[in-house]
Length: 377
Image (cartoon, rainbow, N blue to C red; front, side, top):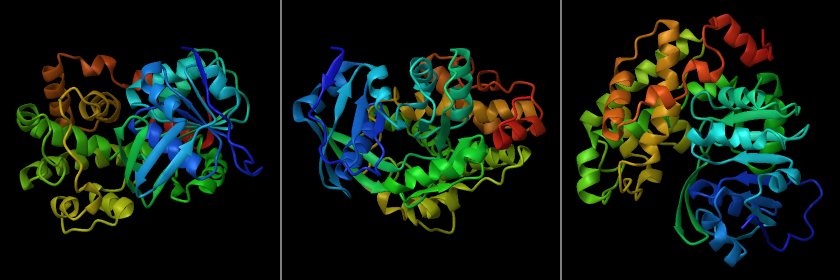
């Protein structure tokens, strides 16, 4: 199956952009369905046809939870060229370890003026994406940006059916370079007023809270996950005071690396307040007080993005930057090692090191000049 057309939306308001959503997993279906419910023309791409066949059969995505309705899509296709050619805003919603592959596929087909947003970029997403585009000969003058976190807490709950547990209150977004951020925010806020400008992709990358939360909670609950196949509440039951202590250690190391880059990163405690309005005297209390986390089950297996994505695209780039800048990250290193032993994977070899970000050996001054002003020198 190559192309899967769906009856297009009629009478779309002229001031609304056409969106492409790249990826039809939990997040991609939630975003595609919600944007369509809002009245946007949405084109959905997925690499494999099996994932989108139920969407084609239904004609779109049924959404419930915080958003309710049926989002009829304009096009569903396994042809990325076709999806990109009719779209003004490209929302990349795939696991971050697939960003490089998506960039390589997009490179020949992007055109001047398109806005490409990684949802989210994790750590170094925009840097890696830009590096891969250049390596694949992309000459298009696009605007590339990354979100600090994914705007939804969502899950696919049936064929072409998504449940949005919560839409985050605030999601920082930044372009590479930062001089393009105002244009990105202006466009995105028409659909999502929750998107707000971040100072740079260094800030969105270093505020990758998923890389703090997911690997720690998953590894510290590995036995429980394997013995119950994830039949417990991931945050409500999986985070104990001892687990929270490890979370806080990872958070401190992350903030130290950010400080070395000249970035004042938000703490995980403050992020919970910003994203969810969850308060507490410490990280343990705030996570327990976050209503949006109630009911979210643990992953059924350790072969899950909480390790396979958040280790190589979160902890590895943070630790790699730390090594380049002379910042110790022993808790990061330990988690990377433990996850590698569990999966028999060299996450240093496959992860986003500074080499893959295209900044190996750069000074902090050069990195900041590139990120803030677009100077490649």
